[in-house]
Amino acid sequence: MMTAGGEIWLQSKTGLRIITRVTPKAATDRVEGITETPQGAALKVRVRAVAEKGEANRAVEEVLARWLGIAKGRVSVAAGDKARTKTVEIAGDPRELQALVKARLAAAS
Image (cartoon, rainbow, N blue to C red; front, side, top):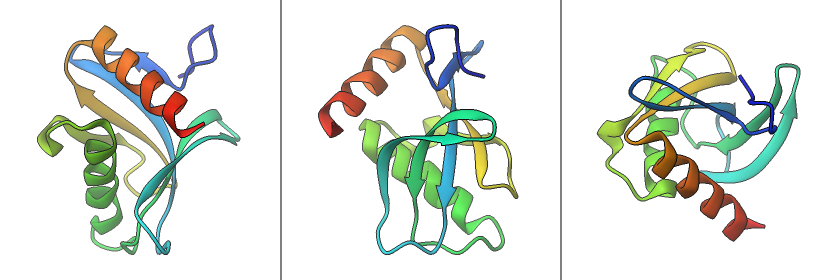
C-alpha cells in the first residue's frame, strides 16, 4: 500500500487509506510516528482499549481522528479488523489529507 515515494497511504475514491500498526492495551492513546512491519512502513498507533469486540478498532478511529483534528465519523477501519496491521480509511480530499498527515508527522519529529 505504500506509494513509490514510501508514504504510508494510498489515495482512494473517498479519501485516503493509511496503513497502521496497532498496539492495544497500551498505557496511553497516541500516534507515535512511523514503524516498519512485514507489510512495509505503517503509522504506529497505541490504544488503551483491549482487542475484544471491536473496542481497539473504535479506539484507533478515535485516536486518529483526534490526531488529525477531524470528525471521528470520517475515520473507519477498512481492513484488518482482527489484525494488528490495519488499513484505516479517512474520508475527504486526498491531497488535503496527505498534507495534514505529513504536517502531523513532521510536528511529532
